[in-house]
Image 1: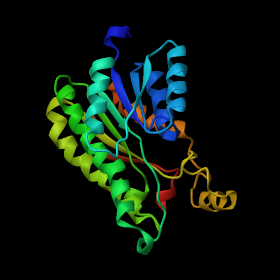
Image 2 (image 1 turned 90 degrees about the vertical axis):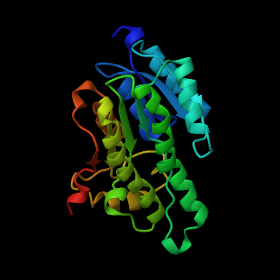
Image 3 (image 1 turned 180 degrees about the horizontal axis):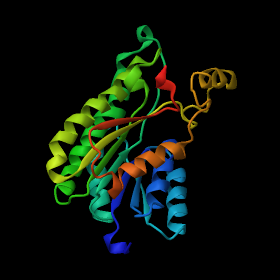
Image 4 (image 1 turned 135 degrees about the vertical axis):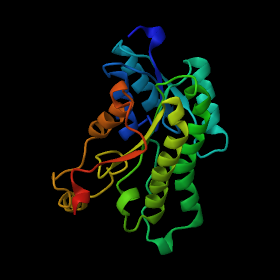
Length: 252
């Protein structure tokens, strides 16, 4: 694809885990995207990823710092990307954090932090994207949700609720933007081998893996492959869906 016509995707949470894998997947897709890599606190990882992607000479990449928990940060990020790389046509919102506490010990600020980063940032980023997406017929929005947002999570009500909010946002926004041929979907992973789960003791990982029919955690690349497909031309007729990628865990 000619560089001038290459689409541009904003990947949030691109300094680690699923976000990094999504950036690599979109940049190396059959129809590659130039990628804007949002990070909050780890510039070295984001800049190293940008250099890696640029080194492959299939797509361009640049790192952008933004604290998505701060008011106005999402809008400023989209504007900076538009000015420095061009109008974005895709968003993959993979930024996130996990707080595991029983409900009785979950503080108001825990709820605020999780909803700000997962749900409110998703909505404000999407809103900022609309002025670009309404001018094309290939817009793509993908939220990285969680199986917890579909089936719940013991000792993680705030996280499950924040991820669950993405499912409602997805369906509502999909109805609003269908007139522009923009699609909106959620990828809902089960257990994934990322820095977020790296602190789990091996004994706990082994026990949790027993609940997965395929017997293991997902690789970030396996989640990213679904996100990249949803951003591709081949997924133009899929919208408003929450796609569970959990190795069969939700089958019971």
